[in-house]
Every structure is written in structure tokens, then in C-alpha cells.
Length: 207
Ligand SMILES: CC(C)(COP(=O)(O)OP(=O)(O)OC[C@H]1O[C@@H](n2cnc3c(N)ncnc32)[C@H](O)[C@@H]1OP(=O)(O)O)[C@@H](O)C(=O)NCCC(=O)NCCS
Image (tube, rainbow, N blue to C red; front, side, top):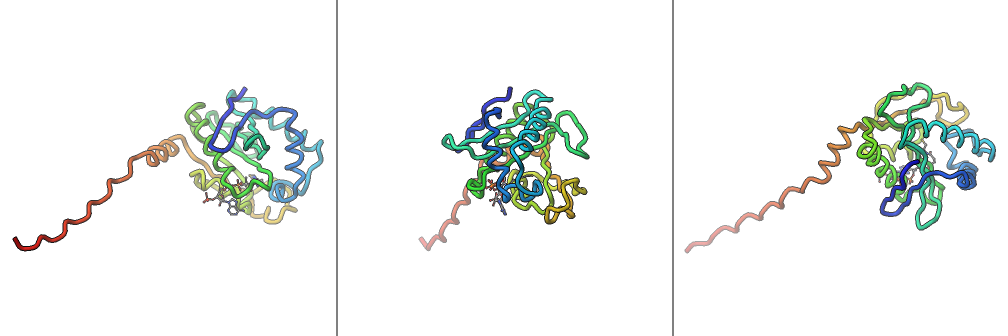
């Protein structure tokens, strides 16, 4: 079981099998899948990918797969899962962040809004030591979300994604944030801003 999480605009709850239809709809959009696959996927491929992600997510208590809603409308999904991919050492205390939104919700700050809540949950409630995210180097929107979340570029590495994806030959990138960095950012953002400087006294006239 993973908890329900809430942000200003989103409600994130655990994935249910009945959500497969909305994931199938998202995965059938070639723009959504542009950097993820060689095109739209069949319902059976979506179901298989879903089963695999659920199995990975459930290996560590508290990690898993959330579906996000804005005013009861499906927006997309977010995942915080134990390291599992090729070249990801299975280090305890680490988690891999991912996200995918229906196209009509893009560019409204929603991927990063829920991402921030998952960072808070991961560091504060699960006491994770490090959260990372990986994407194709050419996936600028995904990299922008990582940067917006305060994650820093760590490394680039060759990908095993299909080379037919335009730009896949540039490989993948990893961004990450440690618990110490996250705490420092929290402290900096909640620190009182410097008191406004007093205007200089006007020069006194004679007398
Ligand atoms: C990547 C994705 C989740 C971004 O979602 P989003 O809700 O549009 O992102 P946000 O609105 O939270 O934007 C976060 C930052 O990224 C920037 N950004 C988002 N889309 C961008 C784009 N297409 N080009 C450049 N910057 C972009 C935003 O300007 C914002 O930057 P800021 O914080 O400096 O203002 C969405 O495009 C998507 O679902 N893509 C398909 C699936 C995918 O590739 N997932 C990632 C797999 S690793």
C-alpha cells in the first residue's frame, strides 16, 4: 500500500488495475511516446509494461505507482520505484522517479508539482538518501522537469532504447538529488528573506 498524496491541484492515489484504460490511451499517443518507444503501443503491451512496473514498485514498502487526478480528471501517472533498469545499481535508500502525462495537461506545471510532492514524500516520510531520474538526452521536456525539481545532472550513458527513436544515439542522462541537498533547498526556501534595506535618511538642512 502507498499513501494518497495531495498537491494544490492534484490528487495522487495508488494505481488500480482498472486504470489500465487511461494508460492505454496515453500510450497510444505518439507524441507522449515520442522518446519512450518506437510509437504507439498495443493494449497488451501496455498491460505487460504495467505488470512489470507494479512488480518492481512493490519490492520496497512505500515505493510504487501513483495516478494523478485534477478535479477527478485523469492527468497522468508518476512512479517512485527502486532502481531496476540496466546500469542502475540496486542501492538501498535510492529511488527512480518517472512521470507521464496526457498531452492536454502538458506545460501547466503539473509534472513538477506532483514531482515535488514525491520528493518530499521520499525524503521526509521514506527517509530515502537519493532520488534520481533518467531519460533520453534528447527528451528536453523531461530534463526540464528534473531541473525544475532541483535535480542536478549526474552522468550520461548509452541507451538500450530502440535506435529508431530520433536522437537515441545521444544516449541517456541521469539527474539526481540527495536528501542533504533537498534539506538544504528546503531550508533556503523557508528562510526569511532579508529585511528590506532602509532608505537613507534625507540630508538634514541647516538648523
Ligand atoms: C515530460 C512531461 C511529463 C512534462 O510534463 P509537464 O507537466 O508539461 O511539465 P511541467 O509543466 O511541470 O514543466 C516543468 C518544467 O519543464 C519545462 N518544460 C515542460 N515541457 C517543456 C518542453 N516541451 N520544452 C521545454 N521545456 C519544457 C517547463 O517550462 C517547466 O520549466 P520551469 O520550471 O523552468 O518553468 C510531459 O511532457 C510528458 O508527459 N511527456 C511524455 C512522457 C515522457 O517523456 N515522460 C518522461 C519520461 S523519462
